[in-house]
Length: 477
Image 1 (spheres, rainbow, N blue to C red):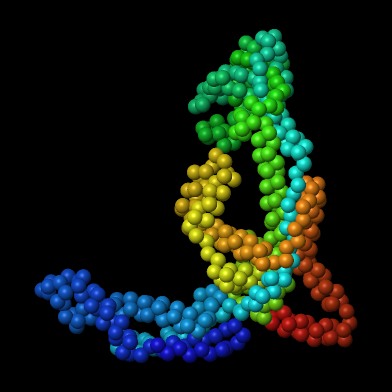
Image 2 (tube, rainbow, N blue to C red; image 1 turned 45 degrees about the vertical axis):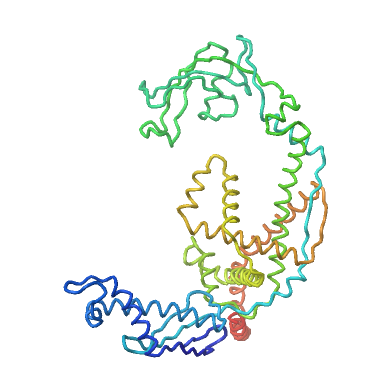
């Protein structure tokens, strides 16, 4: 194999690959030997079919298969040996090919730029740890207790009020007709939460044990029996019991019901939970800080094809006119994203960062824990969507790179209070929102600037055109 590299312009290269006739014949001989032992032709014993017969029967298919294999093997080898990392799929142009001929082709490649990651060691990043006061854990525990009331049956004469738990049996009809699922036994409703049907709870207020009442309510739009969806139903209700909420005692027994050893252990667990909540948010802030620092790095040239692909992603869902107006802004955003991605990827490769199967499965389990009650649905989604698993692998890969950057960067460790953490996070959210609004307004500013230029005198207009040409040239570089 003979490889010649021609630099066309910037990151664009033509990789010319030449494979002589003898080498191609060797590939063909190997393939014919392989199929000779598997082909069954009438009049010939297995493995004894002459080459000429095989060539007449399967020549075209054999050559195409050999050509595909040779192109794949040699193109990969040509790029690897010349240390060319393509940005996207190279374009292949066959020049000479055919059975009993040499093979010559050209790969038109846009190469990834060379990235210098030495400056990563000089990145400065804040790393926060939050000191949680014991009173914060006590407050969280009281909130948990408040939302988990004990209900005790009230005396028979007690009328139900908002916040009470009512136990009832019901049967329902629509236009005097019963329907599937129209009955409920020992149904429990906490009045005021309106969790059953809209307006249902309020009609039970004032009832007591053994009272009956017909309650009107509209069945939901997504009701399983479609013919009854959005129809008014009459629910004949029989009140079995009215229960009043009792204040939950915060003690060891309460803690054990929540899975802790005792109350002291629960306080430790809650303190850790609060700390983790703030740590996760502050870690994302540190990550954002690192990514912004990486944006300041210099990359000589960013591949145009990657910019075009990213702009398409950014403009998804927009109409053609709006996408055109926002193109310049999207290109700037795309360049930042791509540059950051290239730096992270180069740093990851230099440090041989990989994502193993165990780490990937741990991330999937983490996703499952975030969707309680929907674990099976989430697991099915990942099993049926390899692209989603690949995306998740990319997330884990990036996190590993960010963590390694933190280890190598200049870290400013800060211990802060919960109030300070909230202030920092609030300020960060405001800055992020301001930046998003600023980015959204950029295209409008350009339109306004263009209009004001058009209203100037002809002399000034000619100067503006000259300047615009220069600006256009710069923006392409």
